[in-house]
Structures are given as C-alpha cells and as structure tokens.
Image 1 (cartoon, rainbow, N blue to C red):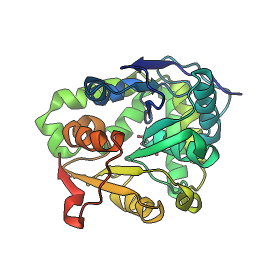
Image 2 (cartoon, rainbow, N blue to C red):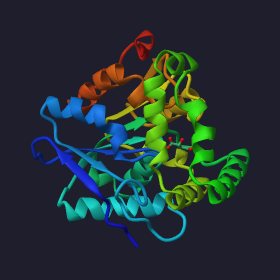
Image 3 (spheres, rainbow, N blue to C red):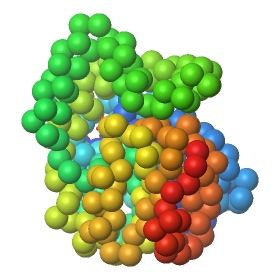
Image 4 (spheres, rainbow, N blue to C red):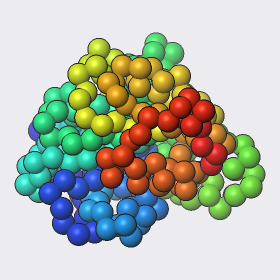
Amino acid sequence: MPVPLHVTRKGPNTVEPVLLLHGFPFHQAMWQAATDHLVAANHHVILADLRGFGQSPPGEGPSTMEEMAADLLQLLDDLKLRRVKLGGFSMGGYVALEFIRRHPERVGSLFLCSTRAEPETTEGREGRKKLIAATRKNGIEPVVEAMMPKMLTKTSTAKDPALARRVENLMRQAKPEATIQALEGMMTRPDQRPHLKKIQVPTLVVVGAEDPITPPTASLEMVQHIPGSQIRIVTGAAHMVPLEAPQPLHHFLDHWVAGKLEAPGLSGLRERA
Ligand code: MLT
C-alpha cells in the first residue's frame, strides 16, 4: 500500500520539476543547500520525505525499494506530474533506480549521488541485522555511531566540527521504527545492474573519492552500463557529498538540470571539494 509522502515544493511551477530523494537515515532537509541553490536559479524543486522519515507516515513492514518506488508513483500521480528530473542520494538512489526501472516514462533525467546498483552482500546483510538489533535496543544512537565515521572525511570532520554536528543531528531526527524498516528494506534491495543498460535518459553520477559506503568503483560500474552517462568524482569528500562538498555538487547540478552533460576527458572527472 503506497504511503502519502510529505513534500516541500519550492521555486516556480514547471512541468518537469527536480525531485530529490534523501538517504538513510535522513530526511528532505539534507537537500537544503542544493535546493536553495537551484531555486535561486529559478528551478522548481520538490523534496520528498521517504516513508517513515521526516514528516511522512511509516508503512507496514520493511520499507522495500519496491514499496518506496510505489510511494513515488503515487506522489507523481497526486501532484499530476507526468515526468520529473529525478535525483537520489544513497538509499534515495536505490529508490530512484527502482523507480526508473518500473516507470521509465516518468523520468526525464537522472541524478545518482553516492549510491550503487548492486544488491547487499552477505557481509552487508549481517551488518544490517546487527544494526537492527542494536536499534531495537538502544534507538538511533548505534546507527549514528556506525555511520558517522563514514559520512565525512577525517579532514572535514577535524576542520569543520559544526558540519559533523549538523550531519549527526540530521541522523538523530530519524525514528527508530522507520530506521529498522529501512534497514530491512535495504537488506533485500534488488540487483539493478542488469537494468542499467535500459536507462535512456541523461544521467549524472556523483561520488566522493573517499566514500567507504558506496565507493567510486560502484559508481564507475554504473556509468559503464548506463548509456551516455557521466560521472564526477569529488576528491576530498566521503559519503555525504551534498553537505561536505556543496560547491562542486551545485556546479554539477546546474549542468544536469540544464541538460548540459558534456563528456569531459578523463582528467575532467575529478573535482576538489
Ligand atoms: C544512505 O546514505 O542512504 C545509506 O548509507 C545507504 C546504505 O546504507 O546502503
């Protein structure tokens, strides 16, 4: 059963807005800086809280990528949007990949940030199970502890403690039950690799060079299979590119939204945070 997602719409109404999906265990506020940037350039941006996060109600049972993609379809139908420019960060990217596989006609272009197409490994599944048990017992704190060292580079954390606190505070707003449901859903996420070659819209892939959760190798694999896709690897950034490296990210987003994904030479692939 689809869940009615809480959304925020900003900027002038256009027929093909930018729709951004947050990662785990965040909510739409993680896109605040990117949204301000895009809206200042007169773009129409929609932010959605995935089920159970932010102000969206939870679903029943595991928050699978399939169910979250169904929530998204319901949202587009409710908003009477035929197509969107769809962007997803990490778990939001898993949802975006599932959505475009099911409903390619509803996506005008795709932006995949710090994400991957492969399913969970056995080791990853074991890690999720432990985290679920710990969250049941102690709430969100074990998730914050497990994820924080992977969100930002050591350098960023040392140089900008306020940024680290901001990331932590965003995570602490997640409800334990929704967190468990999302962990269960990510554990069984489908393998999107066989479907990548069918993506026919302009696609931008962005990843931090030091991302330990969704490493650049996973992004490189996606661009090898998505026809005509482009990759930008941000040096000096780990997983949380939208907060750790807003400037290069916003620059890439400008090109993506404008439909100007010119192929750089290999030397043009890397941008410094
Ligand atoms: C996220 O940022 O959404 C998560 O790190 C994704 C994951 O744990 O696989």
